[in-house]
Structure formats: structure tokens, C-alpha cells
Length: 305
Image (cartoon, rainbow, N blue to C red; front, side, top):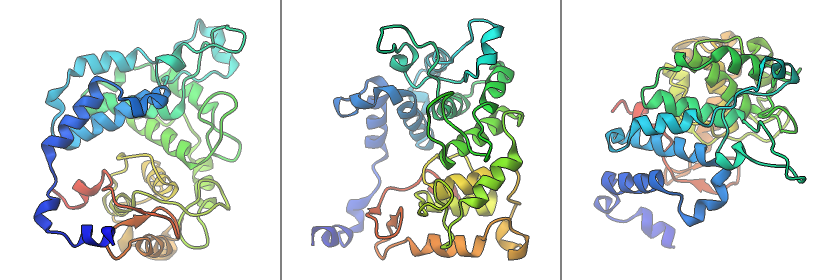
């Protein structure tokens, strides 16, 4: 009943308060509130949402961009010497200071815990604040990242012991795209993995044969129409479509092409996505799941404002 009353309330009471959102993001920029302290190891990811949010709200002038750049760069992993490159280590970015200087059960320091998702967030932050990504040692980063790709085309996020699914294929594709260098992945293998993840209902699961899942539905439509693919690494379906677009396997204005020209079933994908919208405008991440009422990052570009 309360839910129905909320959506039937005066439209003027639902006006987006830009200033309050900016103040909240600036608070998150300055410190990590207690409810988020358990996520300290993912601090770089939290920072990505803060910086991206401020950018969308056109408030990047409220932060010290140079300080942000220096902090992000300080989280990059570097080899002790050239010989360590042969040991399969990934030289991306750590998620936080605690992951950068973590130790094992014996108290010995673990030298490299850099993560593919943290690396995506780091480069996205740097790109957002205007840093020249050509200043980063792309050869080191991409050469070590290619070792994370598995025989089936998927990616593992760390050099040992990590799970593999579409989220990390997207991270790898976005990293290569931002760096302007595709030597860090085998695109054909990644494409085959993604195609195998499309389910019978049109959506994509995180791994082949798993349940379809997608959060950023409006961003999926944007990607299919005009190729904006950087907004957020979220649901499996978004990760699949965005990765294919970044890798060059989805053409411009795809919706005007014949279905037989597509490497994925686009009509079924769009039908599945539209079925996830509820009467009140919210979206379900998967069938019979709770509605998600937050707006995806791609909404602004979707409406062209």
C-alpha cells in the first residue's frame, strides 16, 4: 500500500535534488562512512561511482583532480624486475591500500593482489578526470592481462584463484578500448564465450547455461543504437552487449539491420529486456526478482540531454 501511495504522489515531490546528490557524493569523496567500511577493499570501485556521479551531475570542479590522479596511480602494481613478468602476475591496479599491502597467514607480504575490476575502475576514473592514459605503461598492463584470459575466452580477475564470468570479459574489453590497444585479449575467443552465454529467453547469463540477468536496460538500448558502452559494469546482459560493441562485433545502428546479420539474437534480446519493465516503470534484474528503481548511468545520454 505504501509503495502504491509513493508512486501516486504529487510529481513535484519527486523532483531530482541535484545539490543533495552532489553533497552526498562529496561526502563519500572525503571519507568512507561506517556502513561502507566493510567494503574498504573495494574503495577504488566506490571512488569510481563517486567520480562518475559527480561527472554526470557536472560537478567535477568540486574535487581536486590532481589529488585523485595521484591516488589512483599509487594503486598500480609494478614488478620487482623483468623476470617476475614470467610468473603470470597481473600488473593492474589494487582495489585499496589494504589489498595493496595485504599479508598471508604467516604474516608474509603478498606482493600483488591487483584485480581486473579495480583496473577498469582506475582507468575509468583517470579518463573521467582528464588524465592522459598514454602515460601508463600499457605494454606491461596488457601483456599481463592477456595471461588472465582462459581457453574458453573468459577472463579471471586475478592471477590465481578467481572466478570467471562475463563481468571480467567486459572489464578486459573496456580496458583495451580505453588504452586503444587490443593486444591484451583474444577478441575472437571472447566473442565466442559471450555468444555462448545468451540464453533461450534472449538475455545473457554470467556463464554459459546460467540464468539471464541484466540491470542496465536503458544502457543496453543505447549500446545497440549508438555505441555508448562505458557507463557501468553491472548485469550480465549489459556486460555481454557492451563487450561486443567495444570489440567491434556490433555495428552502428544495429536495429536497422536484418536479424540474420547479427551474431546474437537481437530481437529476442530486446523482447526479453522489455519484459523486465514493470507497470510503475521499474525494472527487474531477472525474472520474478525485486524491482530496481534506480536510474542507470546511461539515462542522460538515452534522452539526449
